[in-house]
Image (cartoon, rainbow, N blue to C red; front, side):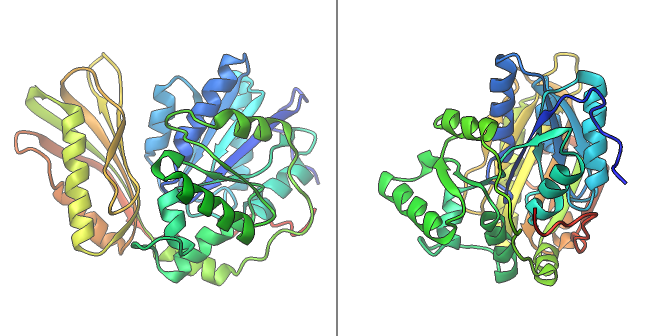
Amino acid sequence: MKSESPNPAGVKARYIMIGGFLGAGKTTAVARLAQQLTAQGRRVGLITNDQGRELVDTAMLTSRGFAVEEIPGGCFCCRFSSLVEAARKLTESTRPDVFIAEPVGSCTDLVATVSYPLRRIYGETFSIAPLSVMLDPIRARRVLGLAPGPKFSEKVVYIYLKQLEEADLIVINKRDLLAPDELAALRQALAQRFPQAEVCDVSARHGDGLDAWFARVEQRMPRSGPAMGVDYETYAEGEALLGWLNATIHLSSPRPFDGNAVLRELAAGFQSRLAAEGAEVAHLKMTLDPEDALGGLAVINLVRNDHVPELSQELEEPVPGARLIVNLRAESAPERLRAIVESLPGLPASIRAQMEHLECFQPGKPTPEHRIASL
């Protein structure tokens, strides 16, 4: 029996899903696309997703004024009903004509477990966009054997490559990190290995190349046919190698402190400890939300062990206290991640820290609510 529509008005909304591995820059791209659509007079609703709770992505996107629903506790494939309910809530509150959904960065098989079910069950409600899969070019060159450097173990790489295998659009993000010949070689390698996808390159942070990609996302239809095969045992084992940690910590000080500098020092401290223990970073995201009424949000990202932590949003003034959210994903045992985060390396001695929330775990085996093998 067909489920109740999440869009009772009966007008088809565009459903855009932007996938890709942890650290690819998906959230920055989501924000850019949402800003462009909003400027065009479109109503946009965003749906974030994570295995845990207390998401940096949700805090960052909300701080920019977007309507956001968060789906914690599992990927879209395992929380399909929650995904539909999130669309319903956004429809009731802001009536978006475009939904942009960002799945968990370790999730794959999205065509068979999300796109195809949406098209079959809710085809009168949603117009489904081609699946975009973003990648970090430094990570991709290492995975594809184009450059030396640390990379994940074989079963984690299995997930990474499966994400690219099901993509309609492979989006090389952060193209400014590569020389022209390196970018051309990466494009060629991706086109040869994943011929089903169109390859494009952008810089979501700097805004370069986005118009052509966004035009494809808004106007084109996804392909149909058999979905790719997935070995769910290997998929589960790959996810289980990743440690997942979300923490919320209250910081306070007798005197106002520079929140941007504190985030940089914490990120550097975490980076040093993780590298010393041989834990390959997938993504470290942190936000610092001041407790005063001035608002604002500082955001910092670390996407590889040898990457320099980057502040993508900064605070304008020192703060007397703030709420720190830490989202850390790395190939390491969760208990090791807990010990590192609880020690707060790099935090100035003058700042008092009180842990409000901490969860660390390895994701369980994916169990999709629906899996449609062909459409």
